Image (cartoon, rainbow, N blue to C red; front, top):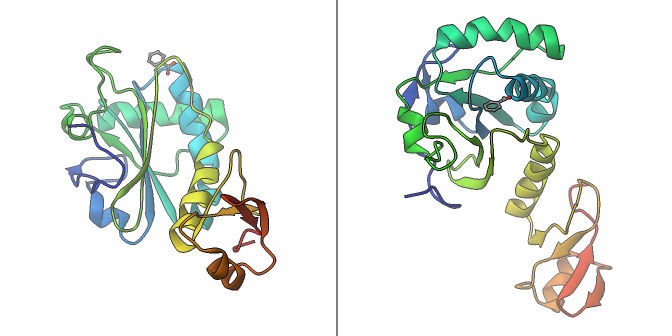
Length: 210
Ligand code: BEZ
């Protein structure tokens, strides 16, 4: 069955470019981004993996660890890493899991038979420190992801897990947020003094973390 939001992210042990990874242990208390690419030595994937390397500072700020995966071997991953650094100007600074036997790919249903029956699609699983799946994304092989979305959405996930707020369309850290409907006006006045009522069901307030 497909992995759904709120499920515990399946644990596994697999080889990577940075040694053997016991997934839950490796995550520790961090948030995690497990993302897949279809195949080593392919053009779109080369750009994506370089971009994730460039985002390391953003991930570190948010206590997030990134880890990639494809059905290739550690040897192939290692041969490809030099090309990524050369062409994208960033060395891959996170582990790449090797899954030639598709054990993790099957566990997470990362191979979508009707798209391609041998290669992983472009999946993203964002996992909280409680090891629960907080968000999933699935893109086809032909479309590179917009990785700017990942730090943005992690800001929202972290904010909304700590405060009784939700984030509106295209929200970015520091912009006004929405008070969730389960908060009464009385409670809102205490928690979010000076909040704005646009409609009784649409109440906004300053980003409490800004
Ligand atoms: C790519 O990364 O460019 C790619 C990978 C698999 C299929 C198509 C494109």
